[in-house]
Length: 252
Ligand SMILES: Nc1ncnc2c1ncn2[C@@H]1O[C@H](COP(=O)(O)OP(=O)(O)OP(=O)(O)O)[C@@H](O)[C@H]1O
Image 1 (cartoon, protein in one colour):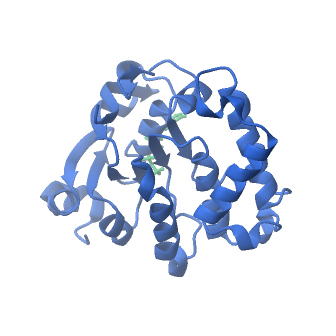
Image 2: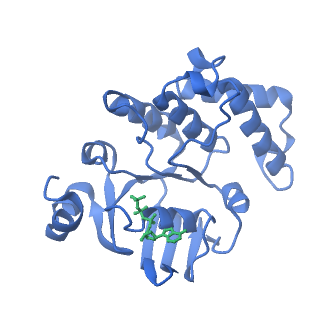
């Protein structure tokens, strides 16, 4: 099956404000998709619903053909839909290596209760997994630094690395480049995309910087007032008149 994620007719209102108003999206395996839209357009609401942090008022969500609509975040993670947050969810007082060890052990413990190659992983496997992520995300040189001692970009790489521990089929990144210095953004995204390139993982990332969107996304989904204004190949979507008018201000 090529469908990694399918959302159908998602609706969510907060005190009468329609944060999602009949949102339907299908994402295929291996697609790199950017979610864009003005502040309050409904991007994070969509990501929160897909990852179980918010329950839609109506609509359905499936991942690899399996319904996940009412599952808890941890259950959804175990089914291969993982995320990073706008603010990195890392332990500031731990080193990068220790942060990864904690995350790997949580993943292994979760896997013990289901059919997963991680189920029988022991301490040595945990160490190997940590080494693999340190290498894949170019973090080896910072392994003994605490999370507070490294740059915003490095902390974000750690966060994204932690989100990939169980080799997700769908990875949602909420503003991955926020908090990354502007002169580091492209290098940061290069590392992230290279690290994910071999996994055939579908990547959805929320982004406000159209230079980043153009460079890394093959497809763009444009949110506006809780609805999807455009969904298609990057240049076609960004070139749409209403997208220029309501979202990119004609600059894209
Ligand atoms: N927990 C909540 N309680 C009340 N209103 C909310 C909540 N979450 C989102 N909203 C509202 O839903 C709408 C969509 O918000 P959402 O955060 O999804 O937008 P966004 O596109 O991610 O914006 P941003 O780019 O600013 O992060 C906004 O009007 C917002 O105020």
